[in-house]
Length: 269
Image (cartoon, rainbow, N blue to C red; front, side, top):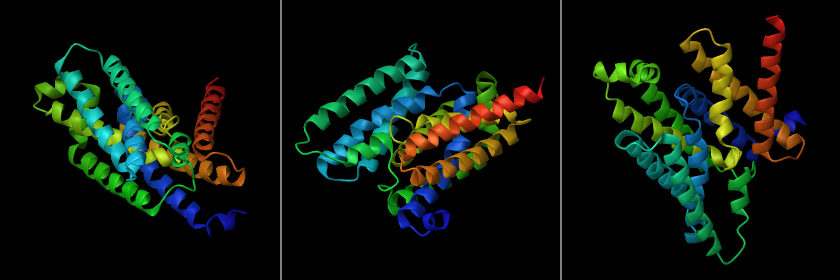
């Protein structure tokens, strides 16, 4: 059964996409969790329904439309956060409700049943294409470059945003770029995880790393390693058990985290 998995092209696409997305989300998720902005992933995922629906209505690539909506939303969120007294969580709730509602209205305008919509909502191994693997690779490259170039500044901003401003760090620009990359990571993960479950890819590995790492550099490595292992095993199990990939990956992520936390608690007694 295991050897058969690696002979199936759609499984190879899913595994490659899973590995690439795990690395991107493993890195970005650390900053999302430490900055206490996990809700942004959920908001962007739900808002992406507007882009997906527009893409299906027009017969063009839904992922590209979803990325466009995600970028617009992340820019609006960052602008509101930096230039108004509206709380970040409130602005996410307002904007994602608006875009989600727009998505529902657009879907209602689609005459025929669109089975592709289900793969976006709940994730599907069969629906992942090579072009989406390329998207995941491109995202990882951009994330790697961004982190390599701005590492010290973004770490400073994460732990002491006011101190970073005083030291001359362009906090406003970094927030825009970071939120845009997080939003794109959410969209690229949707075919694998589904709109409903994609937040887990950012939050759970980073939470594990935060609990078990001894220093910040370990946090990023632990997050990436955890994401790769849990996601790959989840994809393989979803095929073996014939279950939705997104749900299986999230269940495995959560169960593994719970087991490790329990073992740590037992050993600490």
